[in-house]
Length: 247
Image (cartoon, rainbow, N blue to C red; front, side, top):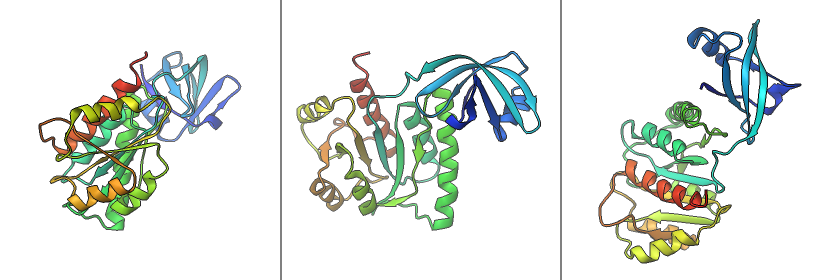
């Protein structure tokens, strides 16, 4: 079933009023006719089963058939702080992170980041990544569109993460799977969790030490060295399983 997002202000008196590019997509790309059903999320934990009622000048009117609480969001907000990777790897990371339940993705420029973006290029990249997040949220049936933040420096990212309950930094030199399991098992639903992932080549030792000084906890992902585009997704998968195990 097709899935769209609106704002709460577009929901009124048993109807949803759709505007902008979604109307063209609905009418001319998907060729949805009056009476056809679709799912709409308001980004505020409500979703609606709707039927197309009519197309008007510049908009579409949907009739609400059923209102439901969103049940696809994790009880905890997961923040992925991703060291800027080379080429188009960030697109894959954003897409899969959204599917796995990430609340926000924060691109981070670290010492070993090969990619250096000026302000103009960074803005275009973030816009592109945000569109990928929107598409992934629709595909995954999310009730919320995860935001891709502006590119941050490493110190800015650490400062931003200070508000979170738990901050994890997978590190190839970290030892002790037992300790890592204990850290993961201590996370409870409702806590906000940040995950710091280095770029190709990982973090420099000084960066890890700085993160630990700021309260982050070093964890291991096992004996194998994971690529930057794999490490964050592996960590998100572990946390998703942990936070949804009571379902």
